[in-house]
Length: 150
Image 1: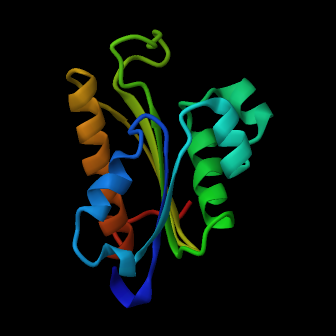
Image 2: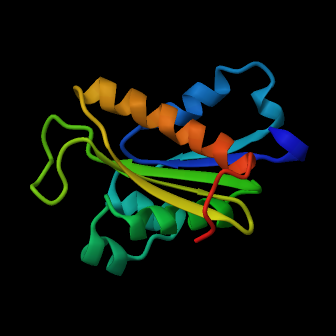
């Protein structure tokens, strides 16, 4: 990671897949701080400080939730770069408003936040694998300044 930066991940639908991909890289212990796998709503509240009201009003798969997840990842780590991901990998769990394959992401540094929603296709494994790739590409984009400030 550039300039002595460290990364923290806050994951739901990817179940730790981003952290696993990162730690496959030799030397990642020098720049990967920690990963939170917060699959249940309760774990999002307890480990990352996501408010129950946010989850009640917007659901776990929402912009509001990934924003709170990324903020909590910062609060409960020593990292300088954070990412969060929450979505519906399927094959069940989708609704017309939030179909299978809908995945929300947030990436942040101390002064920048980027949020995106992707509609991914394929089976559960394919959706999760694509989400991991998007999450990691988002970190690179953020670090390279290819971002919108929110």
